[in-house]
Amino acid sequence: MHAPWQPLLDWWFGHAESANEVAAEKGKLWFGKRNSQDLEAQTRFGVFVDQALAGELTEWTQRPDGWLALVLLLDQLPRMIYRDTPKAFSGDLRAQKLVAQGVAADFDRQLKPIQRVFIYLVFEHCENLAVQNETVSRFMALVAEQPETERAVFADNLDYAERHQKVIARFGRFPHRNAVLGRESTVEELEFLGQPGSWF
View (cartoon, rainbow, N blue to C red):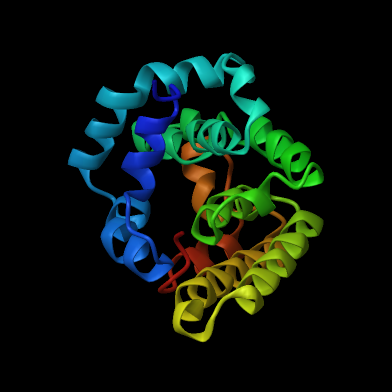
């Protein structure tokens, strides 16, 4: 009998063996903005997302794969299901706490490298410079651990981590979230948001 979280992991990561193959197959799901994908996330996993946001499914954290799935439910899927609303970020604090606990228990080291990307992305979403610095360090280490043939996929993630870090170092928050969260943007932030690549 499959664990309750296995369909989510299969959907998110597929069944390819190499990180290159997984990223090629799933990259548009991970980082594309498509209504059809958002709808599929809602239809297939929306109940689980709402349970996770309500503080349920804590039993999933007993195993690294269940922990990973719960992190996805709190961090990635709300950004799809509740895109462009404050609820898109409503699982962030709990996800950050879960990741900190799991990393302290070395759960991340028991996952495949491409799965670890979505653990460290939780830290990358945090509006805190110390956490951003840790994110960059973890992605640097992850890149260094990979064989040369797989390294480019992880180097791309490191690049994004460094870009997020620079935004937090400059503004202390992500300006592209301001409108959704009802925060007033400064003149400097508005100028920044007018530049290419400023919206993550």
